[in-house]
Image 1 (tube, rainbow, N blue to C red):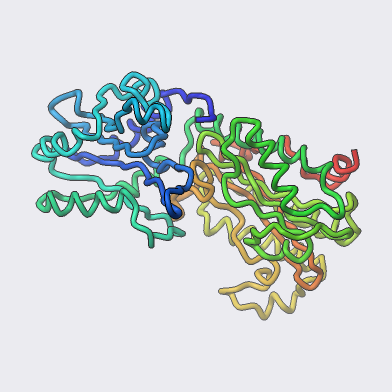
Image 2: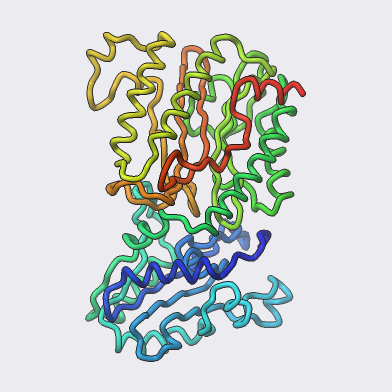
Length: 430
């Protein structure tokens, strides 16, 4: 891995939180992701399943984590099953985790090779009453493709039909949404790498530069700082493309007089950062561009202050909409009559600000979290209001990542990344 080893303290802590939520006489099983074939003998780079990583730190294919807190045999209360290294694998792919290195990574003492899994599972199932299986229950999940986890669920239910099956997902949504201090440090590292990318590209952007050249500059900076690259597919949309929310072609020339919307973030140790900045391609905002920019910035600052413990996210988004409403009236984009006549299900401000303001962030860019329970200290969110004026080919979105605090405003992980309009112009022209 490119990243520096993470303290096993984090994974020991995470497993402890998971086991406290389990019913008695239950075991839980977590599988790694597959290596995805593209065609012929080509594969996608391996990306670990976030749940097994969160609970063990194991960042390797063909891995299984088994947790059984009530097992009569103490050594079988936490088990890792791993792919065994052979001389051939070591030469062709590189050495895999050994028993010693797996313990150092995870804090789990009982390590078996994968060929022992079925026999040991069979023994433990005779003692367990319930089995926690891991399903993808993210509200935006695309579950068309069958995963290694899916195949295991089918296998387990067919072989052991008399057990009671429970869902790990509700527990994972709860424990992953509140960040440990080690996780916050890792997210800060990802944000710091993103900052390096921002400071690299601002002097680089000018009329005639291609969007993909900016992407290339960012990738160079990220890889040079122990990141695997982008935490998600970057959006680098200049001119009208800034009004396309998920524009990812990044293939157009940056034109004099336009603004470019740049939504990107570095990953570090599987943790995501998620930033948006908008800058004038020629280094100077027009008066209109600056007015819209500052309106979005005011909404972002006000929205950030609303992310406090006890607030419901639905209430939060409604209140941000009211703040945006005033800014759009002041910009002449909507009128008070539009507001009086609006459909409550699609308020007038939605014409120019049609997406949500915040989402959970962590191991996933759109991380697991509890949308139906109040915000808690330790939750990590993006804050990303935007105004998109298609008729003016102008899209402005500003986004930072923050950690909710017990008292006071959230802690901004991107506090050192330039965001004020004057600051942006100064750096572009330095």
